[in-house]
Image (cartoon, rainbow, N blue to C red; front, side):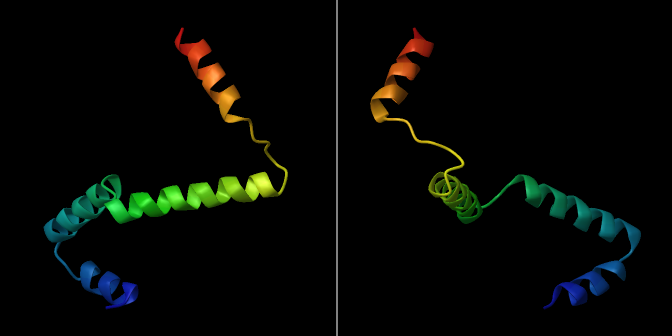
Length: 74
């Protein structure tokens, strides 16, 4: 079923059914599936790698990461 078909069908529902559907759809936005979360992290990782390769950001050594972490936790 296409989005236009779903929209058309939904708009033909009575007001209470439309309200219920809207509520369910809004709640579904707050609860991403595992695969959606994985895709979001993959997109973020790719964006960060692209920024690194383009010279927009610079990496730091693992030793420096741990040094800063220990410093902030102490």
